[in-house]
Length: 118
Image 1 (cartoon, rainbow, N blue to C red):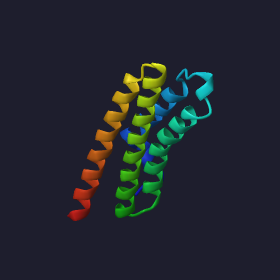
Image 2: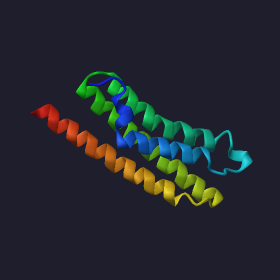
Image 3: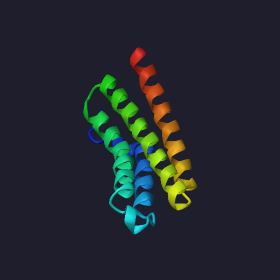
């Protein structure tokens, strides 16, 4: 595996785009250090787990970390739902991005799994 090859992945690039958009969200001041920080942590965790998986130099470990990244995507999705329900902030674009990221992660996991079986 090429060093830092994960930065070429479309799913990693899409995740970074999501993170930038989350940082730009206008969240009420009373939530700036609670829900906002949790949202940033969960979104960042998607990207970090993709990177860590690639850094493990093992297909089995990579798949495990991609699954963890997918779990972090679900957590981010739920955080956005909470933000929408409590504060009425329109987060549909971000929810759609996460749905796409989850599909991309699932496809990547399937591709890697198929390649390791051959």
